[in-house]
Image: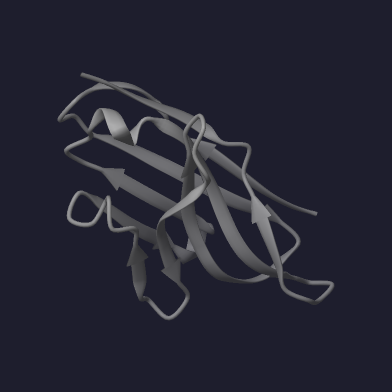
Length: 120
């Protein structure tokens, strides 16, 4: 059993900052990719940022230069530092991880989501 638990969402004014955290726990052999997606009403879920096990990172075009993803492999935790937030960043943010559990295989897991609201 693998769980992803997110924290750090909330309400912030335009131009402000928030930091999201996501901790993976359970029967984890290795974590390949950890990242964040978001979904706002009426829109498809989109990739925000991803941190790959080798150290490389990817960002969605709309957040490049404003958001920074980082990983603490010792804690099985991924962070998303969000700066210069805009009202259009308002969404539910979901943690995502590609994990090999001790039982083998390679699976994608999702967190429960955390709400981020940016007021204008």
